[in-house]
Length: 276
Image 1 (cartoon, rainbow, N blue to C red):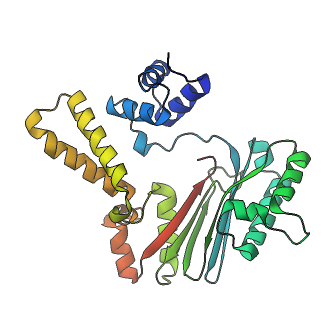
Image 2 (image 1 turned 180 degrees about the vertical axis):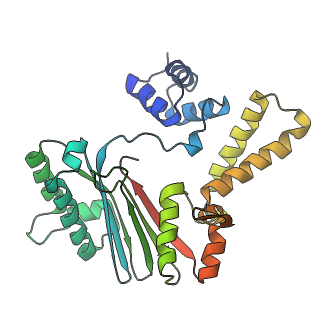
Image 3 (image 1 turned 90 degrees about the vertical axis):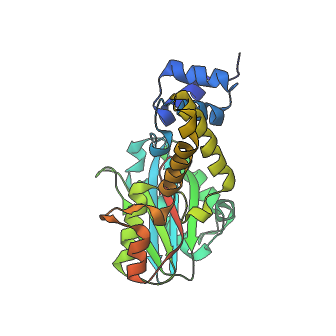
């Protein structure tokens, strides 16, 4: 019998929305390998995994700030929404963000090791918050953009909670409100890469394999397989590439067209969603 736990089944169900029995069968067939199980469920067409963001696995807040050519963003996690919306937790997130502006750390690990104004490390301050608030608090990730125009957007999924989604966009040239518009688009459509050239070759090949196996599972004729597979792979690449997506505020235009009209481009972006 494959080695997996009830937690693995729950995680697979939340990610794919497939039934419990289907998840167990997939994990059995994949010999407990979670990623293989996801692929198996996709091949069998149970649910569209790539379009599903999944449920939140934790609570917390995303905080971000842009000043001049510096943009910083931080995700702070906690266990319950009760703590997430509390003044102490939100205050801690803001305090850590101010320190990130100063530290400009290039990794979460270095940020946690950095010393704050009171002489304590970020990790020590977070540990103190754990004791004070009575549940686990942790800095999950950070983002820093320096020496470039930056677009920013924060989104509240619930009016009584702090922002749960945050986006920073590194632009090649300042474009005013367009930077915010692109950040809003990224928040809504969750691209994974800037351009199709950024999509890793192994990811494309895996998608091609899935497209081939799912087309056979659907009983597509042999003569049409190649065209169907390439069509699905092309669709996948467009779906995950920012500049090829239809723009959120004008579906008749691509994001690239909006950027070209504004005389700018996107060098990089960061999108954080609490728990994902």
